[in-house]
Image 1 (cartoon, helix red, strand yellow):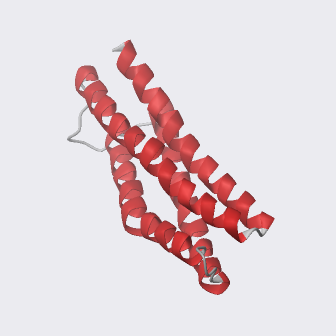
Image 2 (cartoon, rainbow, N blue to C red):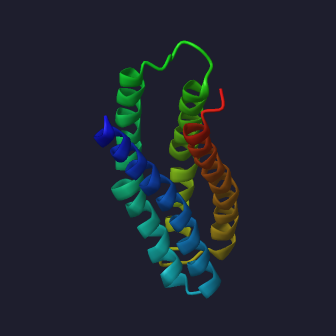
Length: 149
């Protein structure tokens, strides 16, 4: 059980950490104004999602469900765990349906023929949606630690 808890915590750190660092590197590249750097950063954010975010999501789900079963937490009622799972699902839906397509567009618009107007529009949308999808996992972390209900 201790191993599962450790695995779950490490996965949460990687998950939230990658979300936050992706935003940091994206903003840093954009402030540089270097179009090539912006494009490389947009591509690397996508790579980091597949290398870090996706495996951490899978590990969080598996370790979290195993911990819930071993701890005999109810999945049939509203509690910190079911609310966390619902929020985690919302985050996943946002990532798959909104953020990934926006990231693909950022890569496209920052490519060889940099399209500043379209890139900026897509980038700002990514910033807003990305902020929301960063706050949600932080709220989930709070629920996991505090277990308020």
